[in-house]
Length: 348
Image 1 (cartoon, rainbow, N blue to C red):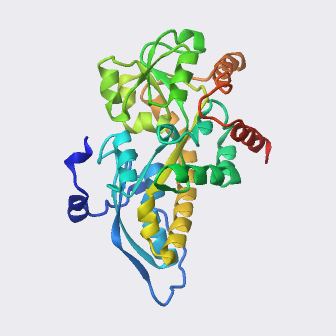
Image 2: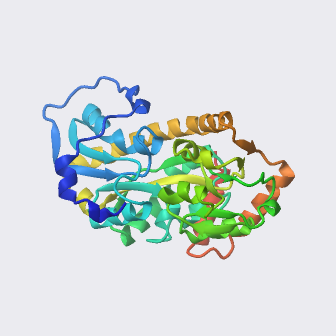
Image 3: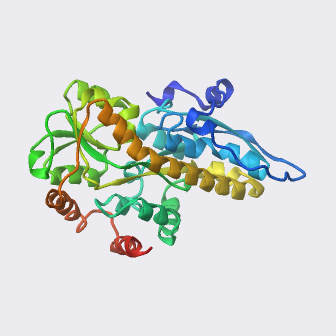
């Protein structure tokens, strides 16, 4: 959907905040002592998100005004448009930089085209597990990288969330116990070079395609599979066009959340700090939910007939070896960042 089909004025005039999803409805906050005077931001904040309402990636933004009101006496009118209602993945990323929308989020791989600062987090197998990911999100390494990114791209980086945990390698042709069996399958990818290189390293034919076009691409056999997390495979009913999956455990997907820099700077200082604190708390809640849902959606996909394969140790080593070979010479990646991640992996 093209951005020129909408105007920001029409969005603000005709759109009300979408009702909070069922996944959020049960979340409550303790009673708090109110300040004497409530702060209010008059300008509405428009968020164009790629996740569906109630998904953790949606929850991490949708909860912010609720937390602001209940814990910090700050009133913010946030108008949320989920499920890529305001355009494709790439058009929403462009729109947040121009100020057409105020907030958006997507996986880190989609942001590499604007600046390679976070490219290292998408190195295969660089994030060992969920515990390491959560340490990384609040580490000096994350903060340093975010500051560098903000110098090059007109956005304010918000606290990150997981985007469904680890991706699985899906296809509708055959089971893939090891990379040698991939053998030229057409696998949908984003435009990020590292993701394209990973699919090629596994023997696949990488085919860049917008997520919103992927279902049709599978249906028409333009592509035969993708490397995506269980939550998105289930929520977008991609399983209707798929059959097999392999738990390659290569990429832990991070949902990179950003706000237009001018929008953030226009906030009064008395609102900026509470906004960031609320964004962090919302991200913490969403990450807890996302971690729980990773196993849940794997189970749901099995119920609808998906064959999900867990490689043996020897088979996994073949997947891992092919992926880790990309570490050396990957474009735009600073060795110091990789060393910091290796050190973070070892910390407890």
